[in-house]
Length: 291
Image 1 (cartoon, one colour):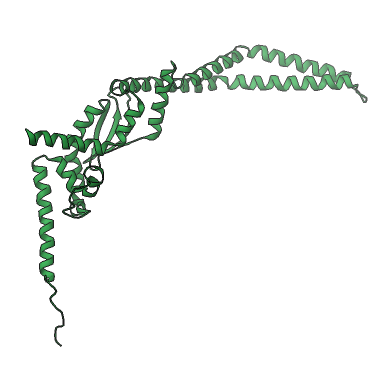
Image 2: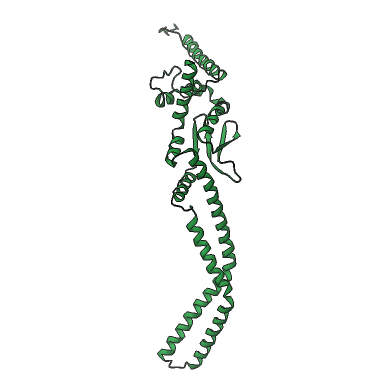
């Protein structure tokens, strides 16, 4: 049977060789950028579409839209390499953040270098992203607002718990008096029962109900008094935890205010980190090339 395949321009072998050469050139360019410590070019080569969208709309997609797929198996090593300069930059912008590499290229972020500091998020150096805990950020923002009002975030709750502990302690101190009052009411009940009969007057019925209500109230107070010591201990632990949290937030707000004029300014910088960092690298490159 005759071979009916026709040659339309390049042969399949030539096309394959051409594609392989492009991939080889991409790897060479990436290796050269790493060797020259040109992090800007590394980011351009890894995510050219994002770079074009956020930094330079005229950027040439020389190696297609997703060249990172060619080196995905080197993700951890690339992230580890890129983290060096990125963390240096972050230390300048966020001097209160500290970074711990838990796995190659994977970092957790702490707020402060004091004892019992909080973990605030994670760092993805490959995507230039600070993934911060939104609940903790919200708490930090509220602490700043409370501080501006001359208060602490947990001040009201601490005051409520402290006042309740005072109330409970008074019940403990008055337990003997409560027991005495209970005995008196029970004796009154007994005396009243002797006055009763087949046809009990409305007044006696009313007194009986009142005694019953008073006893129920006394029993409730006695039960509360019995449970008060454990309740006080529990609430003292809560007060301690809330006070400790206020102290920690005080350290964080003080550190934040040294570097930023507002929480909004701080938050916006974390949200636009990719753009800001690459523009910084771009400016550095222009300075170097012009020098």
